[in-house]
Image (cartoon, rainbow, N blue to C red; front, side, top):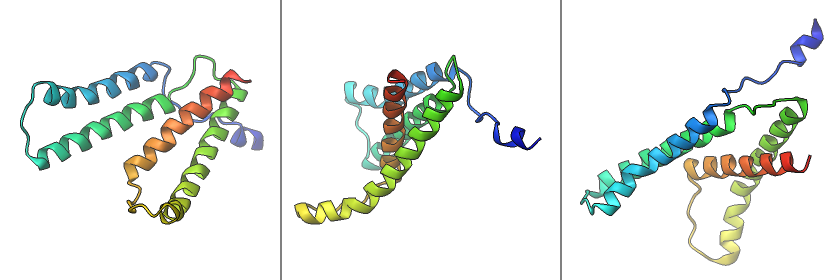
Length: 137
């Protein structure tokens, strides 16, 4: 009874969500490309809103890819998935703590890390780490 508690599989989305994630990522870039290629004039607030919505759609697509299961999801894959997430979380925390020091040493203007940038860093880093570890198993 006690072992069943600890041996639960993580809740992941279906295999097809990888494709859905890629489609969502591509579709989130389409409005920006249309505005650029058609030379549509937008106010600054509209540009900022479009950029933010596109970035959020891109992150949603990345999240779908990260949370989708593989066709073969075994214990090793789950272990690789968890260690990759753990590494990226630790990397993001260290990055946020060390960035002001690096900016100070380089004497460049300080810009705070936005939440979207940090989440993008973590998701992309996770995907790279996960697939590299899967290749080397």
